Amino acid sequence: MGLTERVAVFPTTFDNFVAPARAYPQIWRLVLGLGLIAGIYFLWMAVMGGLLWLASGLDGLEARLQTIAQGADPVSLLLLLCTFLGMALGAWAAARLLHGRGWRSLFGPPPTVLRDFVLGLGVMVVVGGGLGLLSLPFLPTLSVATPLPTWLAFLPLALMGIALQTGAEELVFRGYLQQQLAARFAAPLVWMGVPSILFGLAHFAPGELGDNAWLVVAATGLFGLIAADLTARTGALGLAWGLHFANNFLAILVVSAMGGLDGLALFELPRGTVQSANLRPILLADMALMVAVWAVCRLLLMRR
Image 1 (cartoon, rainbow, N blue to C red):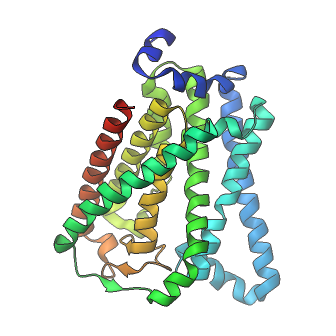
Image 2 (spheres, rainbow, N blue to C red):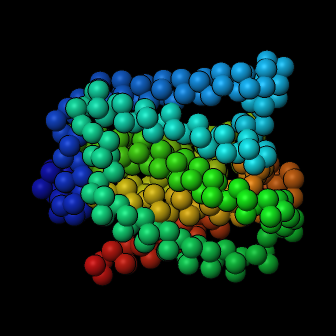
Image 3 (cartoon, one colour):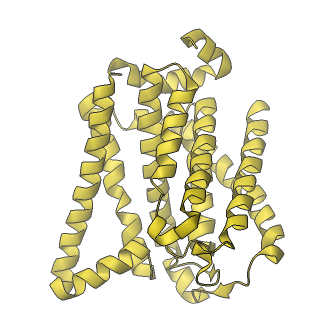
């Protein structure tokens, strides 16, 4: 597929979105950039670990790190979300140092980002939330996980944390990676497929998910593909970010189904669900829900 064919399939806004990446599209720069992102991400986690060591001492550090990894209580969950600052800083550093472009080029036009973020948030809440409510009778019995006063007290910080976490992931996968691949390869199979596969594999956790690990990879990979498509059609990260933010809000702060990151969930599924066959219909229903959300977004974009 040549450049003219790609522009014929996707709007010229995507061509403008990719334009800043064309100055230095070499694959070696991209590979080095991904290494830089990972390095800064882990360096930031080491800095956070050092601060925790100073605050709690060596004896309490190991226990605290374990609770942070699981997001098992409100403070641990907030600290886990804060680790994604390193990922965002890494994306900015890679774009600046290796490709000579600023962090704004990773987002797209700010007015478009804001407008589409609100659109994605609204579609996910209305369509995703509505279908989620209809599916409640088919779910296992939910139990209260966090008292409402505690949930409300931590809610502002949790919203900022989820905005940081989802924004950082969008910067890396649908911003930096998708842009740089599109600057080098014309085929959507590459610049949509590779980030989506890597996004899914980043959620591979067989130790926690058991036999459901690969289905979780498929579900997150599908979301990555949907986000990549909507980013290509809008020429900005706003729509994908809005969907991602709303999805994680529901999954982290409303109903926890994955056995971790439940430190501030209002409700949770029975313990053991995450590694049992009972999780599979939930994941399949979630995938169908995301396809429905994607279809609504595409319809609204066609009417612009």
